[in-house]
Image (cartoon, rainbow, N blue to C red; front, side, top):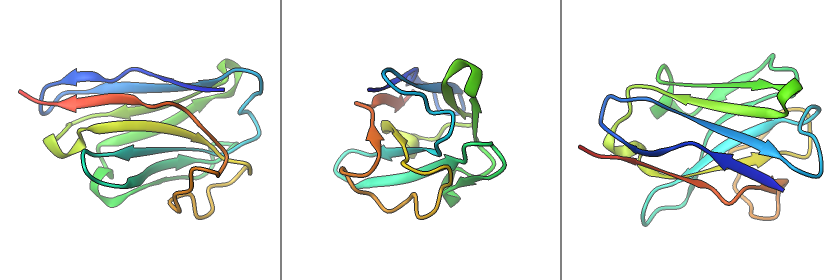
Length: 125
């Protein structure tokens, strides 16, 4: 199982941090990605981090504002979100990939890897 936490209601310009952890298996040797789904839209790959943290990737709209990191000792991956905008509103999902890398992580498939149930982030004043 994959579980996300964090998020909630945040004011524009504010910050929040999402966390992802697993039960029943460890994510230590696996790449991990974050997706989001805005109301009425499809799933968007937001960021990814390789198992050894050597490579991180971000979708253009969040570059410079979001930061992905991991602590394998805590079996956790984090997404720090700063300078939040209204358009960042959505449900954020953690995807634990089946490989150590992040190759093609933005190709959405519900059958790929292990998905969490998601956590809501609402940016509103």
